[in-house]
Image 1 (cartoon, helix red, strand yellow):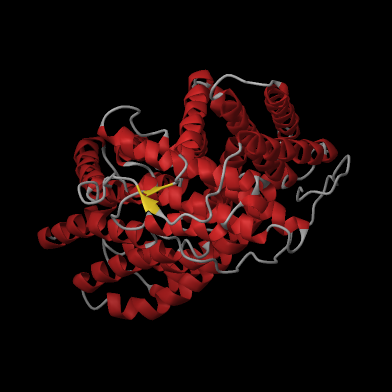
Image 2 (cartoon, rainbow, N blue to C red):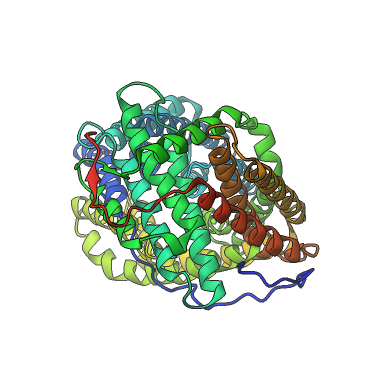
Length: 566
């Protein structure tokens, strides 16, 4: 079933709801890793600058240190590359900001450059799927640097500080690799198994909308697991671990396609066995495993190369335009109100923009609530932090940990810690009037959220409907390919499995694309009836493929382990 009703169109204007926007979720399974990494990356440079009496330079070291927030869900080889690119991107944005600040002090020009930088950072982060925290940290650093007095002669030294801290952040991010070299891929596989178990357990009970949501979450977790595993080497010692985990992800896919024939408890047992450093569980069906992995190999061999970056940037043009316009207008509005730090309003606007207008609305509410609560927290913390610079640094570190630990529960809860931390950082160069800082930050938050959201309403994403049409067509073609193979008495080894996986990918992309387009305003009517029919027929074909391959759940067998160490 689909979460959408079978209708030929949708209303051009959609209701923006407050329901659930501030609801707390379960914390991320690895919530403590980004939190500890952030503190480990930020603390040594800040404490060293404190010892040298140059805490005023902390903004530059924090530019590099905050790169440790990225890529925690990626395998370590992919993490190393991603962190390196994040550090280079951070230094590049900082360099543009510092050069601009050294050439002009015209606030309008500075806001304009900051808005353009924010749009570029947003587009690149979305196109490369760098993951959380996305463009927000990059924009925060580059926008703040625009409003720091600068000379050309100081820039090389400041960039060197950022680069040195970035190297340290890279080392912090890679530090767990010798201890748990397969930790990220094991976690991704466990999440796929748990999501599939949740859907299988809910099958046949509750509302159709709940089934659709659980199924979509299951397929998304499976696709995330495949992306993680495919980043591992296909040969060598690590390939053995990859193949053992691939078998488990295939079992999660099978459970999603045939939930009635699945034992959820066995999936959960496999997921639990992946925790820690134990051996990887075996699925207990060697012939089926061989055919499934042949299918994976066949699909990978036929998979086209990823499109070049410039083609991935094309569909993001509306989001980039929203970001540029919203950030610029928010900064200009702050200047018109006489606020001394218009980059606060600019960054607030930059943090709002999500995949569609509905999600942008939710983020705007979360940002305002979190920031205003954070301003009140700053009022309580400031007297303690003003007792000495050591306490100032320690308060910032504590808030840094709290922000990363809480943000997975809900964005607004993390913002409660981010806001006072950002206010305290502005005092590294000297204490300021608490009341003035609170007033300016509160005003800039409201201005940035209001103006930024209005820009999102004005700049519509009319390409969303076209992408839904393309996704429906891709899903229909994948279903037809699988159906043709099902009609053959003896398809080639691995061919049916490859077709089944291709159909699963197409249906996952279709649901994500349809959900994204449904959250836009003033778009053309979406082909909701075609989406529903494509999903229903596609999932029926998936279930038929599973039955054809006679994949057995092996419910009676105990959980055995593969002789593969993590």
